[in-house]
Length: 59
Ligand SMILES: [Zn+2]
Image 1: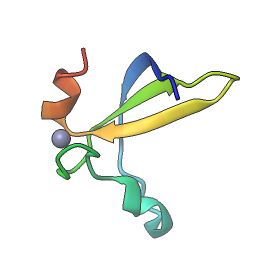
Image 2 (image 1 turned 180 degrees about the vertical axis):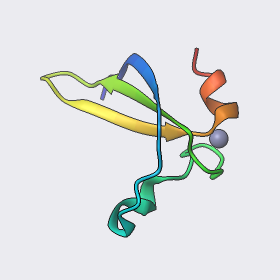
Image 3 (image 1 turned 120 degrees about the vertical axis):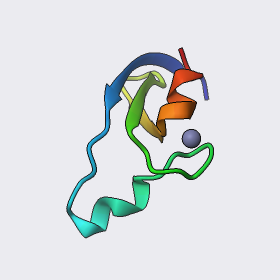
Image 4 (image 1 turned 60 degrees about the vertical axis):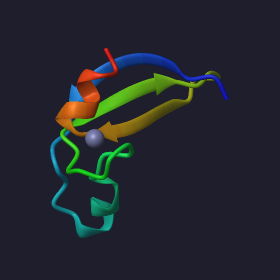
């Protein structure tokens, strides 16, 4: 799968408990503060969450 990075946006924690499983940085496990959006083709958008530190390394 080819991921094309498109943008970053601020991630605000969702109060809904059913969605809280995704609030951690996928790289280091810290609390996520940023979402990175990727285009994986065919109109599909992939969102990955990162903490401040890891998000800076994406740019
Ligand atoms: Zn991190």
